[in-house]
Amino acid sequence: MDQVRVSRKSFGTTSEILFTFDGVVLEIFGLTQVFGVNQLNLRFHRDVTTIAIEEPDRKGSRKVVINAGGSGPCQFTFGDDDRPVIDFLERVRAALPAA
Image 1: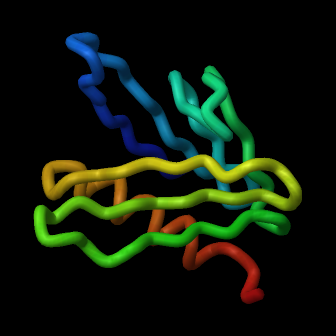
Image 2: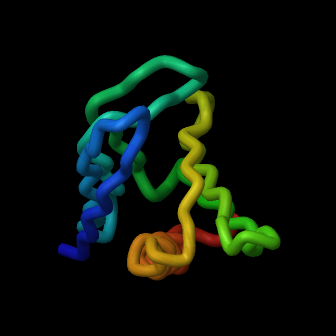
């Protein structure tokens, strides 16, 4: 199982997010937002999941969008210091079936 953990600081509070991938299911544990609604844990099956990773903007931040079937997209923005998460998501994206 591949996994990576990231700390996010928002409004003065630090939260932890754990991403895991067992080759079939991508799981995200921790507080995230989908369509503006807070979610604690998310699961994405590889057969219906897409991951889009944008090129870095001028400040080095990358937008990542994870979508599964008809569910709403899960969006993150990662900075240069979050490179392990980008590397992890690129490995997961490489394991997804070709569209």
